[in-house]
Length: 419
Image (tube, rainbow, N blue to C red):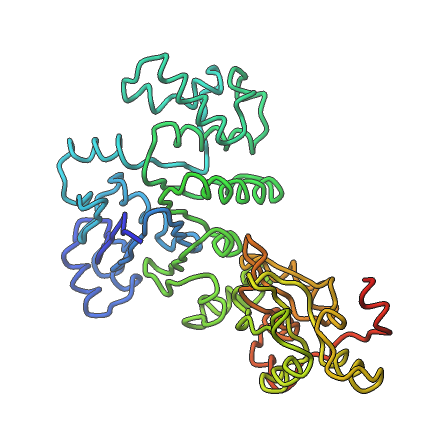
């Protein structure tokens, strides 16, 4: 993935004695002591990170952590005290005002928490505001504004006034205004912070859906860890102007860097953080027309599994066989080495690789391993029920490989084949 935004060793100190403050920071002096000794306020300390093209990089922190100061430095609203902020190789921190204006026109835009729509302008005119500032002609402004409104589902309200829209819809207009200028980088400073929880979740889902199509490079600021974990490809957690941990949602929840981060993630809904892919095992299987019951039972014994998926010649899932059913067919029913078609279950749980674990709880409770399939129904992984429960409980070590979940009980071959 190509790097779109690269930040290196950025500091921001407010006040007159910035050089003294930087020296004290380098010596390990705390923000509080620096303020007392110099009167200078440390906003951001030594921030370094990269954001790839099409990636959502979330900066999460409580009030006063420095996150809003950081995002305002990214487009030059606040000049850094030191460090570099490179967008496609151009340094926002040191470029001329003319270069900065061009970067803002062509590459970057900002969406704020308070959408600040003009109440006497139509929705379309509000969405076209950035284009008007750029000097785009009215007809083109209208066309591009309508396109951006269509992207956020508001084309039908183009000629309405903002007062006729709900809070969530007004925030969509703010987003459409940012999209209309065709930016390559979106800076979003607590854009959903003023919305009710239900509308906020809808906007989060909408942003993710939009991102699948638009693939913008996004720096998203929030104080809500759940929001950060839901949206971020990568997440930076800030405290006292510093990054205390940068990583994926799964890395941060699984391995918090310190007690501060651990306290944040202690009550997180892990079912919304981890996906089927995170707990998936190798797609061990047996093949129709090639393998038989003995092969399947031997493979299960070797892998210490109680069930295996059956795939066809194209690796598409045809069914699942359990050790219990194979043993019953062989021993109890006197079927020496039965063919897999006669024993396999043709109804089985499936999941996409990116499906969240909270959506798999019901399937896992049934006892059968879950087939992870691609868009062509090919088997790409297998999720064991105990791995789902262990990850949801916060203790993946509970998923002991020598303690498989018992297979669900079955009654007869007839019932199996008629499922």
